[in-house]
Length: 407
Image (cartoon, rainbow, N blue to C red):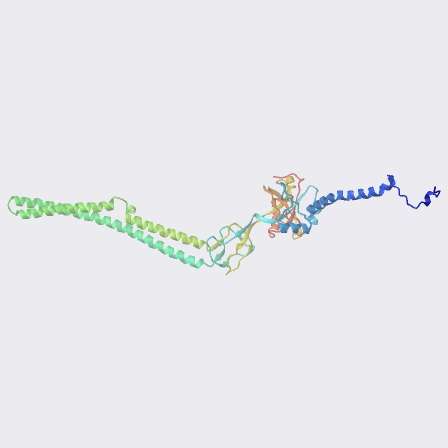
């Protein structure tokens, strides 16, 4: 028997019991790791939402390089509204119900491009007949091409050809009338000769019966009388050819008249060609900008731009989820740092289609894929006078949706 106490045993005794204190650290470590795994999807989802909402420059560049659009693969594509910095003078009067959008000033009917006429070919600009700011009426020449001289000579040549054809027609009519008169005179002469031959035949037959003349003389007179009768028949046929129809229905006159028609058509074509050497104003309005100089080929963007600045408009781009608040007749306030004051107008019409944003703010990180509806605003008289000098100026539009629409 070994009577040594337990604390003097050579082996270390390790307890493997299932006590609560021995398992607590392991369980805590397991629960913390599991929690981090659960939070990963939450972080990913949150980052995706933030990225789609704010669209940082890196994400925008990715969409630009790949050609992808936010939400383009779904039935309802995502299109975020543009970030618009509202001018200070507009902030003071803003309400939470107001609808804000980017806009541009333009004349009624938009800007008209004055291009070279169709068929101008390789013609160059010979001269500009107006200056920027001039008001011109529709159809007024505003520029001239260098083919004007050649085309003017063609008109003069065509006019001479028409004059020749007119003289030929007059001559042909006179000739036909003279031929008719000559045929009538020839018939009268033939009838007179036939009457005389008939009388001579009667006298010769009387003398032959009394034995004064011979049979040969009588036969000669009979032949002469027959020839006179045939001459009358021939003269009647000749006269019938001219007298059966009117002078203008005669074949020679018809041919001369058709030649005159062809020459007149050539003259009309030459005059139309000459008209294409002049560039005419397509509308009544003001010359806004001139793109060409004498000696230059007409540019593809047009020789100049015109617009009816008597009545200025504003084209406002309203984000698609805000358009329900906009109605025709609602008051609109327009502001821009270039103006130094606000302009007033009212909603004239609301577009029927949703398109991509065309106006972009100065922020390089701003979203350019917003879906917008275009709203046309008609400026009042005082505002039109101010805006007439600022066509295509970008402004901020504030539509007051609380005030009742006025038709």
